Image (cartoon, rainbow, N blue to C red; front, side):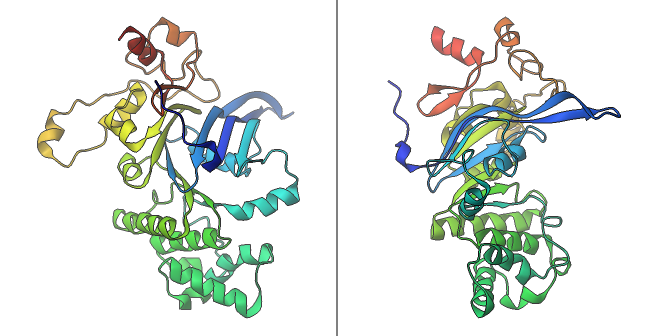
Length: 337
């Protein structure tokens, strides 16, 4: 018998059939001739205090999904619930107030900070916008935030160009922490950093989670880092989730052929084991989200696709206890076992 899900009372974020399509506009008359299906019917939950890793190839819709959850992109269809509240039905003022509880750390520490503002003003801006502090109290809060992310408070009067990439990302983390949010979307926060700096930023996020109880959606393509920091993992391909489960389930018992191919590309530090491993090479390129294939999105590259995969779109189902997979081949294998 399949075990029951974690009690829904501790669900912080719930996404139901979320879609985000971008129109393709061409010609002098700017006519809409198609749609880019960046996020195409995604459903999942994030529980209070956990870190959910979202992985997949570049262009699969990870960042768009994170921003749509925060309503930075208006959903084309579907619902997002935060703390049990439907964000779609909120007015602009209500949503603005709710955003105090939801923040984002952007991928590029070089373009996400205003070069004309001092670090102190960058961190203080959300506090000013939401009328939380001013004057001496505001300066004190900025100092506390800089200390919390491991930066000298005397840096408050400097500009972003005076800092390294790792320091800039810490400034971005401080800005995200300013409003004391419960949920943070970390949109590939370490991909633009040197390897030595990546570990520092990840350790900082983990320490802050232990101290403040944050909940993270950690978007990344580095599967080794995701395994280190995350509690559960969601694998995305061409706008859809193909597998969701705990870190142990996903890494030790991968089911979807796309995930198996991704994991086969992760190097193993043991040279003997690495020599014996079988690498799965996917043929072809990722189809365009403006023209996805009929049936399963992965059928053009899947080594085990059969007739049904080219006609029907597999649903993400709980095929193992708290381990969801969207694959007809896996379903049939379990049915015949």
